[in-house]
Amino acid sequence: MPFAQIYILEGRTPEQKKAVIEKVTQALHEATDAKKETIRVWIHEMPKENWGIAGVSAKDLGR
Image (cartoon, rainbow, N blue to C red; front, side, top):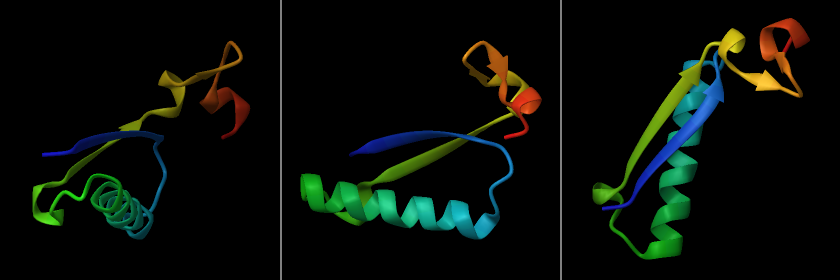
């Protein structure tokens, strides 16, 4: 059973997250020949203040 964990900054719409789940599932299906019913995708939404880029939080960078 393929299991993908995706880490993204908070702020994506439900439609965007749905698209990520669908496309990651399709990619794993094609790459591994696993049945889609066995594929799991877990999206971790990270608060911007908990994500550092070049020593600065994403919140302070305005991302």
